[in-house]
Length: 193
Image (cartoon, rainbow, N blue to C red; front, side, top):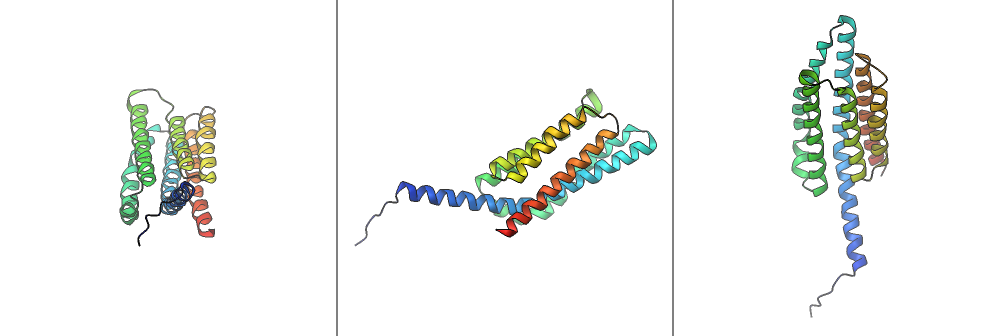
């Protein structure tokens, strides 16, 4: 005889919690490489802009920043074809959209600050990077990501007010390095579990 056995609320909650935790771990494992990619690209491009600006005295080298998405997005797409097919969870979709919107904001702010308005672009980009990483850390319940996000966002924004000119681009080098290191830490922590 078939009995229609209902699950106790505690059992249901335990299954849901376990499913969410597994999803978070999978997303962390998958996305660690993107933190490394974008962190390295940010560090390399900011160092290139700094050196070119410093040695030529021409701030127009900041236009090189607009090449970063042209390099980064195709690399991310190539790295992530399988990841995007696999990551259909609500958390994965939310994080993908969060970082897409962060990237769009960064491009728009850089465009406005470069061509139309006197903005402290470095301060704003550091805030965006920090907020994006911190929100990702909260959603994924990952302390290293949350702390790195605060370090990049708040530390970078405050420091950006202390420097001017090409020296500000070195802050983005540091921010990119922190982003890349947080990706490596995430990967290492996952491999230990």
